[in-house]
Amino acid sequence: MARHQNTIRRVVEVSGRALFSGGMARVRLCPADPSAGIVFVRTDLPDNPVVPVLAEALGNGFRCTVLQRNDVQVRSVEHLLSACMGLRVDNLLVELDGEELPAAGGCARQYAEALLEASIQEQGVEKPTFKIEEPVALSDKDASIVGMPAEEGLILSYVLEFDEAPLPPQVVTLRIEAERYLAEVAPARTFADESVRQEFVQHGTGHGVTDDSALIIFQDGTIRTALSCREARLHFPDELARHKLLDLLGDLALTGVDIEGKIVAVRSGHKLNTAFAARLRSILAEQKAPQEYLDIREIQRVLPHRFPFLMVDRILRIEEENKIVGLKNISINEPYFQGHWPEYPVMPGVLQIEAMAQVAGVLLLQKLEHTGKLALMVGMDAVKLRRPVVPGDQLVLEAEVARVRSRSAQVYARGLVNGEVCCEAEMRFMLVDPEAL
Image (cartoon, rainbow, N blue to C red):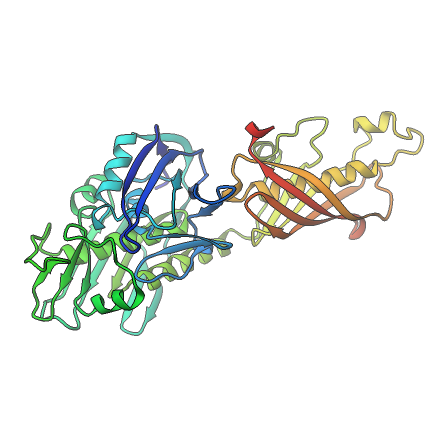
């Protein structure tokens, strides 16, 4: 069942040592606009580059989930994302002063408490939902994940089996609801086998591990604290399986949507979890495309232009997030025809270029990481005006991103009438915050 999107009312911070690097880390959780999604901002780097929470931004990580855009990484995101999924916080700007998030006790409780402290606020815009209607399955050796239809909501089930230690399997099943998540999932701590200690030494990592943030399973079947090796006091008898479910939920945030269905995971880790999220996202993309993407009202939500200088009537489609096709109907009532060769009305070439630039602007500004920015054209090359555009023509406008960075983009654009190219150009844009103008 569809619901409205949520953000938080005010800024809150979570700080502490990072689990892998051991360095101090701080995140600021800030409100975000509807449909902005969850976006990480690296405030320690020049230009404050952003990394979106989507399967397309998945990077390579050692025993954690890593997101990457260009050369910028964010590590250990799964516990914060799990808290967001469990409490249904959809739009969030996460300012991070380094590469890795704080360990925050090795679970999601501190992040969930911070979100509640910030006060969750409904935004009045519907949250996109992916309903699993046919079974979806992925496997990797002896690990597997299967998604199947369910009547309502999201139900997660995790089956944890132990290879080395003489422990019975743990199985936990939970319908994802805020109160149950807070009480039954968020406090479950991270853990590893005794043999993993050597892996951490070999990788030169794990410097932020404490007795409070991680559990170790020894070969004799005992569960102990990570450093002192004292017998651990578990939060739940099946705490280990609950933490695996916590991780799974966080990794599913990479779909960018609510999920309706039942998902059963057996022995899965971050690699398989995120691959499953990517698979669901690809199925969703297949269901949505092709489509009429934006009408004039939706275009006006993206572009600052207004009549008589809004030069795009409709966006027909966006292909693979890097190509766009728009439409401009050329009418004799266009105001520029009154004074531009009124006896021989021809659409001015500079306005053809402006129409191409506006379509390119829609393509750039609909991207998650550019939400709220302005696309300013700062240069053009290889401009060609090949044939006149006159009243009655339909000008089809195409733009394709050649290169994009956090603050700039290069786009190739062209206009066609009846399939014949009438104008084209290579354009360069700066992506700026409105307050900077």
